[in-house]
Length: 108
Image 1 (cartoon, rainbow, N blue to C red):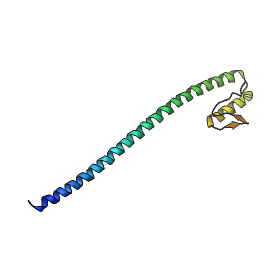
Image 2: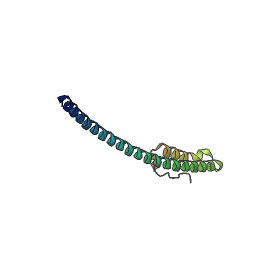
Image 3: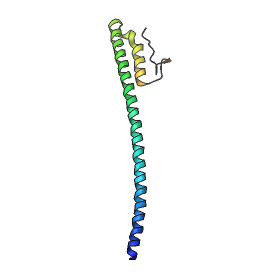
Image 4: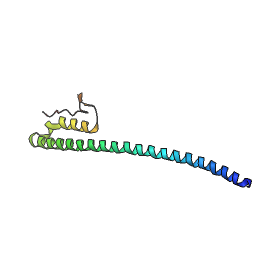
């Protein structure tokens, strides 16, 4: 037997180890990506649920606003509009009143 086959066998064994390590790293990377995708899907689901709640709340507030406009002159309704704007923009207080995260009615 020639010494060339032993050299080729050694190179093939080294390549096998290299490719096995590479495959293991790629398998781990795929697993990490799948986990990240799973987390992102859960986050999207949570955000969609929150969005639906916000849509319902906005519809309710718009309905109340429409009713109030029918009954109350707009200059008397200004504090409620300011509170609604503060709730929407996420500020924590308007005229010393807490408006976020709980919208408090100042329209009574």
